[in-house]
Length: 250
Image (cartoon, rainbow, N blue to C red; front, side, top):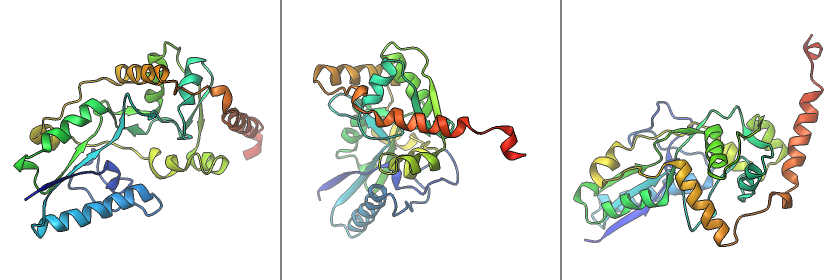
């Protein structure tokens, strides 16, 4: 019987989770407002049903945020593009949703790949799902500090904007922040370590440096000056909050 190894996602779980770190036994009811996660969960249901019918052997690998050379996959609160890397290098202000303390599980592609290879022909992996997520458990503030360190910049100047306000200011760009980034994302990788040989070996800053080098070598690193809407959002937020005083609340 053939084996089907499905690339799922840690986003198949209900957000926010009842308990952290999330284990593979946690509830899987992602919101339909997050189609990527919702559809991945439905795919898992179909595949595991086929496994139960003995149609094929199924293993689901659930990566967290995977990044690395070969992709444009460094994230920020407005989601699209990598121009925030250039902003950090030029020491421009950086938008962070909320207060920057929600956790994000990023993992380099080379480490994630080990889990997929470890699942091939592995009897322990039959009919199971596995987390393959980062283990540094960095906050979004730490995420951007790591990028700044990788490009040799100073400590970033953060502009903290509540998620619900940011979504009103940039509904399309901040949609992924609304449905995903502002939640804590912490996952237990014990099963993948024990069964698949998964290990996190590439630290965030090192992996970011490698990724940025690849983007630069391939002409894919964006110029932040080409995205003026970012500064317009910051200016609007500062104007709005700058007029508030203690007298406004009596």
